[in-house]
Structures are given as structure tokens and as C-alpha cells.
Image (cartoon, rainbow, N blue to C red; front, side, top):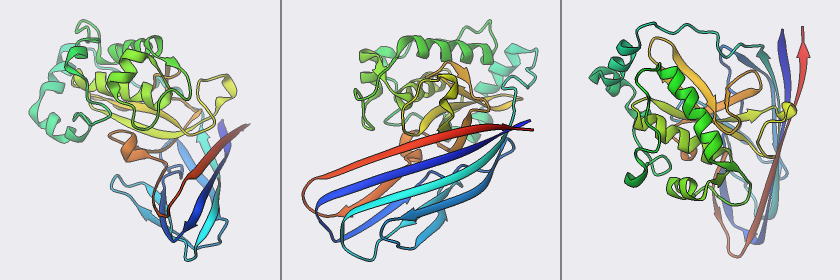
Length: 285
């Protein structure tokens, strides 16, 4: 059994003053991996400029757009089809030696290998006064502690759009206790790293047909590394282990590495930007 997903991504930009020059990079293409396959990709812009593809520093495909004409309005459309295997998110075996797994986290070679995903960033820096808000119980396995952390973040933060933005700090999230998926994910990453577990931020799409929390944009969740197992996805916004409904685009240290859209626009005056994402799923034999 597998799921076939159709994904529609639309973005509209309006600028009050004429844009002299602009450069955009889109990080929105579902990746090919062992659980999902990108079947088709269509991307267009309303100015009919040529789109170029490239690979970013983490190895994920991006689309670059550089309009050759001046404009006030530009829109972008992308359509993807993805086939994803039906997966059991618990289909892995844990070691029975809990102490050995914790010792592995303390190993210098391990820390060097995973340094980028153990390092705090401006979005995952845990303030000193909050450093002990979630500490692992060493009598439990690392996986059990990460499940507890997933539940804890889900319980502590309330999903609410419009109260945070891409620059919201971790301290604000902890103290105000409201946010969207990127805020839940930054908090999960920060606390997992504080307990010595390599953790990375994931951007992608979520099929919300089962009533999951999310909004009309891209979704975010985390992947934590379990010794002797590998990377496991955790969605603290919904208190889930990432499953068939999670369609991965990319990963990085935090939102800054995974921003769906980055750009430089040369213009004066105000601008308005909006974008929407729609994910439709159909089960196949």
C-alpha cells in the first residue's frame, strides 16, 4: 500500500513601487528518499522568466528565479506529485543497553560527527534561566525521553497563528506559550540538544485530512538521532512520530536553513505577500 499526494503551492507578491531587480530562491521541492518518491514537478512564474535549479549546502534542490523585467506584481505556482510508502513509524529496534546509548552521546567522535545538529543557533538557543525546564530521565531510553519531550512541548505550547513570526525567539515561545509549527519545532530541537541528542529542523508538507494542527502553509517537525537506529521524526505540534502524512522537503539546523522562500528585492515602498499550500492524498494499492 502507498499514498499518492498532490501538492499545490501558490505565492503572490505585490509591490507599490516598480521593482528594478529581484532574486528568489524556493526550497519547496519534496525530496526523494527511502519512503517517498517525487513523481512530477511543475513550477512557473507569472512573468514567464526562466527558472533555474540548484543544490543548497545540505544537498536539497532549490528553484531560483531572477526576472529580466521590471514589475509591480509577480506570482508563483508549483505542483508536485509524490508517492509515499505506507509506513509504521515505530518500525525499528532499540538496543536493550540504555546506559551504552547514553555513553554514545558523550563520545567525542560522536559529538564531532554530529556537531552541526548539537550546536545552538539563534532560534534554538536555550536561555540560561530555562536550561532545566526539561531534563531526560536516564532510567528511560533516549527514545522514550524524546517521546516524553514531544508530549511536553505539545502540552506546553498552544497552537495559534498570527502571534509569532520568523524572528520570534525561543524565550518568547517559552514564556508566551503560543505559536505555530516552527515554534514547536525550535523548542523541541533546543531541549533535545540540551540533553545531548543531535536534532535537526525539518520543513515539508503535512496532509491534514486527519485533523492535524497546521495552517495553510508549509509544516515543520524535527528529526532526532538515536544511536544504533538513525534519524527519527518527531512532530511536537501534533504529538506524533512523523509518518506517512509527513512529506519531507529538507532539513537544517533551524528555520533559517529551511526557509521555503528567500529573496532580495530592489524597490521602494510597501509590499504585500501571500502564499497557500494544499495537500490532497489518495490511497493506492
